[in-house]
Image (cartoon, rainbow, N blue to C red):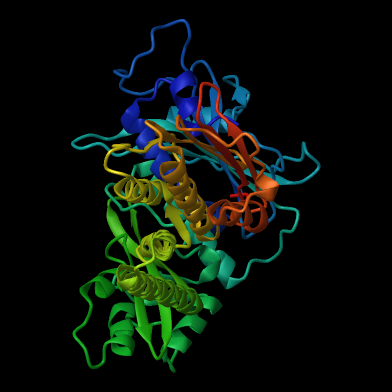
Amino acid sequence: MPTLSDLVVRHTALDAADLEWLHSLVSDWQLLADLSFADLILWAPLLDRGSARTAELDQPQGDSGWIAIAQMRPTTGPTVYHDDIVGTVSAKGERGLIDTAWNERRICREGDPDWSTGVPVREETIPVRRAMAGGEGRFLGVIQRSTNLSSARTPSRLELTYLQSASDLAQMVAEGRFPFSGEEPILVRSPRVGDGLLRLDRAGRVTYASPNALSAYRRLGLHADLVGAELGRLTATLCYSDEPINEDLMIVASGRAAKETEVESGGTIVQLRAIPLIVGGGRIGALVLIRDVTELRRRERELMTKDATIREIHHRVKNNLQTVAALLRLQARRLQVPEGREALEEAVRRVGSIAIVHETLSMAPEEFVDFDEIADRVIAMAGEVSAPEAAVTPRRIGTFGVLPSLIATPVAMALTELLQNALQHGRPRQLQVVVEAGGDRLNVVVWDDGRGLPADFDLDSSTSLGLQIVRTLVEGELSGKLSIEPRQGGGTEVTLSIPLPAS
């Protein structure tokens, strides 16, 4: 399905500032749909293909018809449109209310319910105006508001409050006062209409409180009724009795600015979002959406604590491994037998490769690591212990990317063994690690141009401890494939093919 930006750029004369306004509108018009119990469709005037595209027109023209560029269904009532309307083109005259709202620059509610689909639908249209400094604004399109009347009944006070608030919000759209210019983007987890709603008058007093909103304030410690209370002062009393009052709280709770804040009292955390209602040039009141986020914040804090604990564990494991490596290194220096010293030095390198992974994990927020950094450190460590006369600097070609820790540790150990084995026994002039990561597999090729494999080499019967470790890690632990073959032109080529978990 084409995006709003695609449709605007391809089919309309709206400019970049218009597009930004429409993005702000549709990012927050779920509020209008829920308060209206209605579907919303945003129609933009089609570009007249017979004339040059221009953004200098005082107003976009609707003479060529309309194109639906966005759609929203309500969460508070039945939908009218089960199919997607976005991308639909309507000729001028096909939708009279849209033409009227556009031409007369007003909200249109005329006409009887439409029964053409077998369901009674009330149609309304709202012109969309973008506020402009020093001017009356620029009209960008029309919102079609369609209400399914099949379950119509005598509305409750909650529904009447919703509908009155929707009417005020629609008027703000037509006057270019909604969305709020310069307002921070609304978060996905911001309160919604169904979470809890308060309606305030111009003085910031509550004129209506939904059951969910009242319950949230009960959990904050309220024992009286909300209706008639000055919300800012009441909330401050509940949450800041012994502390300086949060100024953001007073601004949001009084409905004076389009902002969000959180308040906490008695272990309960409540999120508030204010929507000032400005109609006809004056503030007539505000809506305050309320959501109890106590459990959400508790889980977030638990996860943060868990992540910090895991990182601390990795840090301590890394320190312990470095201590073990230091002890092995001291023991190796005391040995007089060359074979024993060499064995301990190999153990030091193996422990060191594991420590590198844990060091990286101790700084990562999750159990995933950027393995390129680890691979480069392992490669550098292998190059440092190569014979001075060889002067071989291993190189990496390609990118490992981000790997889970369960894969990163065995791969780091296998890479350490293969590089060390190539440097000790192959005496190469070149040593490279070629990586192909993508899809569902990680393919790594370690090749050198050294002495090559013995004529009677067989991986299954090899007694090399390093190769046995690599085989166990790749085939046993990672369920991958390992192959060691003579390289064309001389040397050895080792291939690891490791399956990656689905992301």
